[in-house]
Image 1 (cartoon, helix red, strand yellow):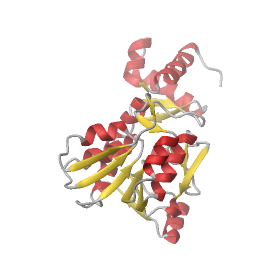
Image 2 (image 1 turned 90 degrees about the horizontal axis):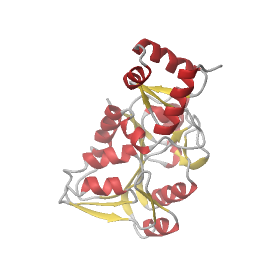
Image 3 (image 1 turned 180 degrees about the horizontal axis):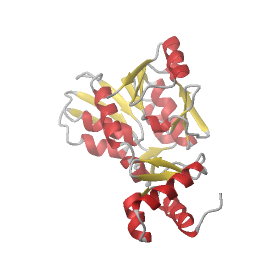
Length: 253
């Protein structure tokens, strides 16, 4: 596809900011909303962008979308997923939450749980749960990733390995049709694997946008998890596979 000047500019903005909004672009280029929507559709059809509500995000298989852009994507769905997951977490329990905007949403739903212990390598999760006086918060050491408030690296993994908790609640950057959880950062993948190993039950929280995405590093398979919480039904083949694995699929509405 040969891009016109406006479409090239839109693509540059998307790559720089992690997201573009229809209304903002219409004002910037002084064109109609319909014109911008057509541009975004053509860019998506050419494989450059993925359409999201109100705009688009860059399509990439080698680098993740910016954290703030991810936080704004599918907010209502993430909130519903978080509520469904938190409803399965009883008071008087312990858990590890990893990096991600959906695990951050789970933390918000745990603010009123009582007598819980949360271990995390996610500074955003820790900051959310400070509001819960009934929550003991254990924050991992390691290298702080300023882009998303995540702690990663060998020190983080060693810290996680000191615990044995009731639940692991993890997010993922991508979920392929074989049921593999994928990510972009090997250091983060090692931490996520350690989290799964140190929990009696393992839950995945992910919205439908992660299906069909590509990322180069494998965390685990859904076959190794007890449940996956999502906002839309999984593809039929993957649903059948989960039934065979004994992995519960919870579709939050």
